[in-house]
Length: 216
Figure 1 (cartoon, rainbow, N blue to C red):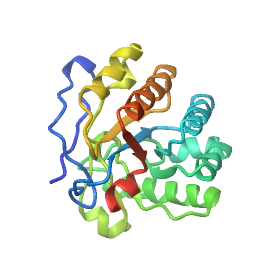
Figure 2 (cartoon, helix red, strand yellow; figure 1 turned 135 degrees about the horizontal axis):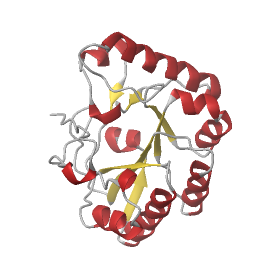
Figure 3 (cartoon, rainbow, N blue to C red; figure 1 turned 30 degrees about the horizontal axis):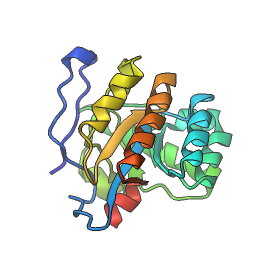
Figure 4 (spheres, helix red, strand yellow; figure 1 turned 30 degrees about the vertical axis):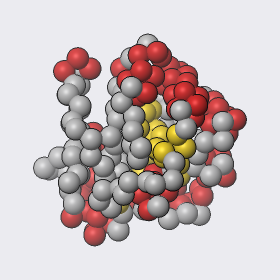
């Protein structure tokens, strides 16, 4: 069952739901090693995304980036670099639009527009979407031929300047097959993400893309 995570607008009011994952149903338990997916929303950022790409490459890690069409239009060189480095690129609508009861058609058009932007830059069809704030309608899966991807761990990096707190929120909860939600729009998020990678690699975790996690 897909659980949606709704943003309240204030960090201290946030209630994280029990773990549940996205798209394609439950992920089967892995017998070979511990695999997790690190995902980043809202980019690409003109500085922090490039910094993150370098840090992940140094550590031999591929991640999943759910990017907005507006930022992809503004920074096509970063979209191409993400693709060339083997990261999975997903759709996060064109302008970070949240689905509601009145904007279904506009929401779909934002997804389609973003797909066109990314395909023009990478030549790849986009099949994974992370709807902003987790608001989704399952009917879109057939209409758009796309799979939604949610998350199991949200460290609230977007509203914290405490790197160690962000790292702790992830590393104390993480389990095999988790999907970690972060953002490549903030310096603290990038620093925390790389610290998370270092710590969890030491604990034997392998970082894979969402697609690898879901389809393995």
